[in-house]
Image: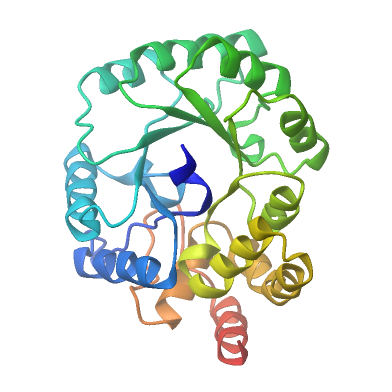
Length: 291
């Protein structure tokens, strides 16, 4: 899974003013990412607002991204939810063409125990025709996947190949890095902690801001992986404000505002999300002009 080291981006789903999917905007964002140096692309992650997409829209979005990427970069597909059986059924019928791995978020709202989380992902691992990257994001799911649970899954299932870790807890990250099996990827799911994770021995990031300021962010991660610590932190400090801005009023409203300022797609989001405020858009625009 070395092709999934470095910078992956969790793509947004651009919308037109009438909130239909904007496929031209999607093309523009994908090309922006590829030309800027991303290492791989994540389709239908939580940043894609996939909970507001119909099944038909999801299929069309994936097909469109595959066609635009045209094998130039590895693709990861988000397949997750809080109904284990539905995910298993989806995986059994999954078209794996041009997909390198799946990314599966820990169940939201249900708040399972650690044994429940283990059993959930065990079912997914057994059903998946592709390698599985776990995704831990307690701020959204309401429950934390402990390092012990992650490592248990990594040891019990050969196709559980990594974790996108977004608990915002470097102690938890260090426990994973210390005890992980050989080849198991530890990937940041937190843009602000991506560089510290990499410098501690991690494998990169699945980023939100990485699709907005592509070259500087990808360059920072590459420098971190290459051991150019001073150069990487210089970039990190410059990027800290925009990382704060894009999450100030929620994701993906912030990153869509960035992409709108850069004329890649509109800033439209679907309810219950709302667009970034004019005040936030002004801060983002001012920052990008200075950058």
